[in-house]
Amino acid sequence: MVRYEKYKESGVYYIPEIPQSWSIFKAKWLFKEEKRPVRKEDDIVTCFRDGQVTLRKNRRTEGFTNATQENGYQGIRKGDLVIHNMDAFAGAIGVSDSDGKSTPVYAVCTPIKEGINPFFYAYLLRNLAYSGFILSLAKGIRERSTDFRFADFRELYLPVPPVEDQNAMVSFIDTCFDEIDKAIAQQQRMIDLLNERKQIIIQNAVTKGLNPNAPMKESGIEWIGKIPAHWELKHLRNFLTLFSEKGYPNATLLSVTREQGVIMRSYDIEENHNFIPDDLSGYKHVCIGDFVINKMKSWQGSYGLSDYDGIVSPAYFTCKLNNIGNKLFFSTAIRCKAYTHFFMQYSKGIRIGQWDLDPDSMKAIPFILPPEEEQQPILDYISDKTAQIAKGIAACEKNIELFQERKRIIINDVVTGKIKVS
Image 1 (cartoon, rainbow, N blue to C red):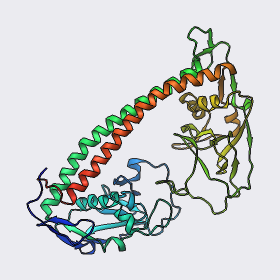
Image 2: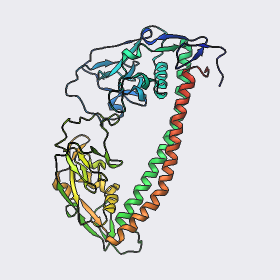
Image 3: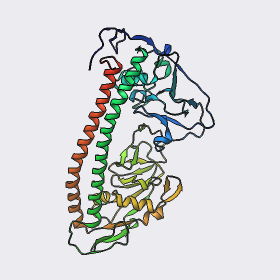
Image 4: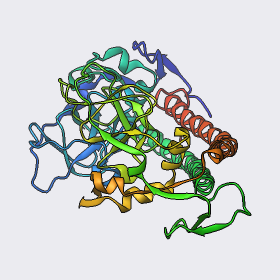
């Protein structure tokens, strides 16, 4: 890559020198903040931390709490520069690809004059986010968040390249990102295949055992088929006892995810603004070894054995585990894809994309139980096989991390004028 012929001091400490043909202006001389009324046809637009600004329905709807009253909501139009006041520090800055409406926590900006490409400034601001500059300016209001409003943005000194340079830089970055995103997608597909292979290994081990010559019998379950003849087909009522113990408001707050099972919950889960009440005395107490089930999302795999003492939302089932033998075997088996099918089958649809699991249905879910002496060898086999797969997944994740870092380097080199693109 070539550099510009001449550079000059910028007077701005986060970008000490800029190409000779560039200028420096305060953001308030480049952008104004819009406060449009909401139209009846407007759908919700979300600004994500990867810089995409789009209709929420275009990407995902899970993990958001919809407001019952849209107080202060504002109109957004395609091409607006959008800054998430609380997540800008993490890269939640971009140009909207859609018309819609948004929460007032967004700053919606449009150029004041000709020669300002919002896409260039979206990349520039995200570069400031990745470097930690925005975090250094912003006022912290909660863990892993900040308060960076238009009043802060408007006072920033920003480089202003000639518009033809802005356009060329945006085109160059977009082209580079298209190629990098293809490489990232390939790595993600490999991760998906490896995870699928992992699920097959676990499912076969916990439903078929390790002896290929063992006599088999029909399980009576279509997607499982035959199981070893000496194994038992029981139901969760044989192992789980529902309980509800409350009154521990200061205990560690826990949650359940489909990927990890029971986890310690942050009071600020990224991009997940679910309401947490001030008084947690009505939350359910959980001990290490208890089984926790998200009633509404068990069909997705949101359940698991807890490794923590803490409390969970009243929307969860909390169960004591008994008469199972090896608890780790139960935990490993119940979280494989076969049992996710069971939780889906036994849940009742209450609205599109949402099911509810009632106690009686939960207790009726089948569970295939091998003799206790076979459980640990099965766990050892799974551990060995999945450890090999984990190495492959880690390698792919490392490659994705390097690709993402490459994207950040490209943004930094281009929008700060370190390299010249044509």
